[in-house]
Length: 301
Image (cartoon, rainbow, N blue to C red; front, side, top):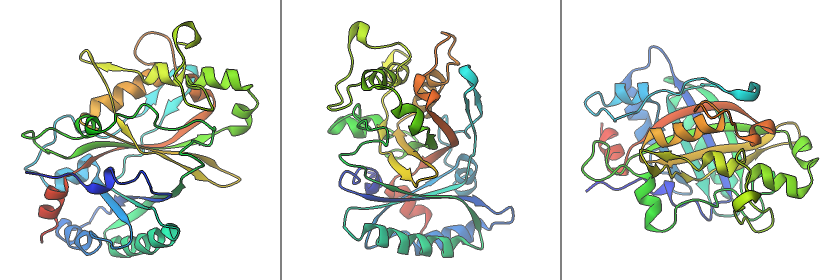
């Protein structure tokens, strides 16, 4: 029976995160890619998750077609808001819970970049961090609605017996916040934007919950069922640019897409997520995260 990559679910205690996105060179040799990935597949000091863009996965495993897996697409939304497509080919997520975590992540990130330098170009590199008690830079707790206990596995992993079992559909996005504008709002107004109370992350109810809050727009259904995802995002940034690197796993890519469509207001109800007035998507990619079992088999070259 297949088992998932452990790094997906071992991040609760991690305070340091390092994200790498690569684009394959046109002349990249797939056999060499597998060989080089095998050299960095098992870091000792940090957790690692490896995922692949749809085109890259098709080249790596042409006999394993993952249902519904496709490249990200541009969304032209309401209110002048646009979600870009910056689809890349290889995604590496490193995270570590120790006080030397940033050092361990950085050391291994350099090994990854060196291993892939003849095969792929580094397209995006972001260092994330835990902010206070797992809050976004807006001051609100991030991931409050995550499925708990066994449900997080059920909602985020492809079911046993299906092609790609114990793998996951992954969405990553870089969001840049306009904190000056957001912090100019009084706290009750900020809570209406998010849909939760700021101190204790309690979901607003009844008439207190605006229909354009972030909670309202991401509370989506797919085929009559709640489109739950498992979020493990982290803040990033410096004094010039700051925001959230969004990382989310689901057992269907369509779960991610319906949430994005509702956020950007392209589902026909004329409403978009008010949070977009204060945060802009700068990158967006879909990935397939194979199970650890499938990854080991892939890299056994």
